[in-house]
Length: 633
Image (cartoon, rainbow, N blue to C red; front, top):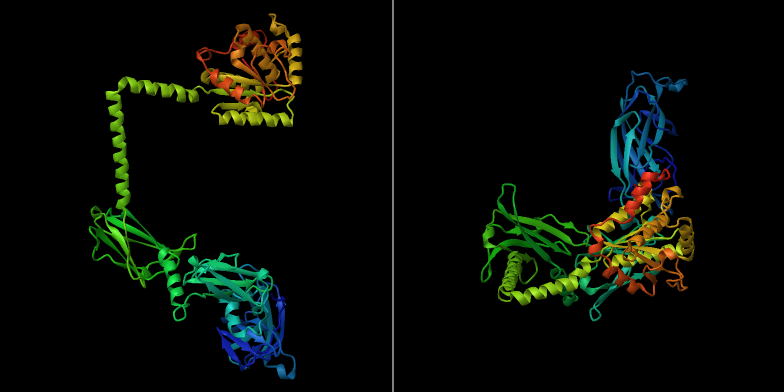
């Protein structure tokens, strides 16, 4: 807004006018005002802090702002600092006068600084000559035009580097204050849009007009009363139902000026011109008054009735408790005035106030009445006992249902129990029978296959199964090891019941054939290469053990995502006889298979048949795992 820099001007004693504490000066020179006992030598910018001469003591600082205006030029913001100095003539001065006219003068200096809360100090050192015959108390006034990092509405701290405890704070006037009187001479006051409006009661909206400005550059916000939060409004019309007498608007040109035009156009509208519109917008306030009540206890355990009122505008009126009989009769001595309450604004922009009625008899189920100034009738009653009655009604309905249930059991025991048993077996057992599913991937799964496996896992979860997918359990596998993780999943199948779903590909089938040739069904498995090097080969070993027991088809299910059909005879010999489903065309058949045969008496209370084979093998030679896994026993 301003170019940083310093200019020191002679302050003209005759001031033209005073606006909001701002003195507007006319012609000025680059000088400082000093009292007669001081003669100016030089004024320089210095860094802070600097050493000071003890011969001069700053006793008082008085900062204030002026609007400095040159003839036929724009006005600028100036900071003026008046200082009272005490000169200790008995102290050593920095230098003595050498000329014939300077025998009775000595050199001294003083440094004045200013800063804003977010900037570093800016200091000015004034060096001058002191007449030893002058009075010790001297005055000096420094005027600074366009002070660095100081703008309209800025908070400025002024102090002397000699004494940091001597500080004064001053606030620059706001741009709106300045522009009220000096809009023609202050550049920042220009380019502010003007606002007018037209009411269309038939269409139920108010249209806003911005004169002399491009509508695309105008910004607008709406607030309830000038002290309320201003909420951005991006339209040029306002619904008539939202307009209230306390609605205010702020308008500014976001590209050309930071000054905002703040007006409350509906505050006095309609008083003499359009009475119907005035009643309409006042009714918008009354229709949006909301009151809530509640019971409570005070710190001394006494009863109290609390109330909360919200409205678009702060209201004047009364609030009182009453006892509702045929009409709500006021309880005397409790009336409170709304204008004496504390109003706060909530997140919706409504004004809220609250209060309590202490030591009130809650057994009377008191209500609250509200009178708003200007309304022809009172609001209320607002009661809490309706909620209490509603809760008692729910309790009564629950008792009636329990009574009906008892009658059905007592008088119709056989038919009722048969129906309940049929309902339980026909509906709820379907949910209970859905057990655990372990979804295992082939070792050659690519990105496309992995995505299909994840979708299958989501489908099973949505159908009520608990699902463990090896690809989404990598963290557990790194902690436990792949084979212990698989063993833990099989243990969970023992307790919950369920199936192992093995995803099959062409390469997985070929690998199954190779594994079968390397590991024929003979004894002495410990003499061969461990089949538990990964979960896929471990799964093949478990299938082999289960086929020897004749129950592999009850424990394992094969699924295939490849488009080419794969019959049972084309499967490796080890996998033949297991249920095979082509997905996604046979999704429903797979769900039926897992639901019907997911659990059963033969699957609960028994260990997987491979456990004995694992114990025999590990007794002969323990299985060695990599550093990230542990041995399986």
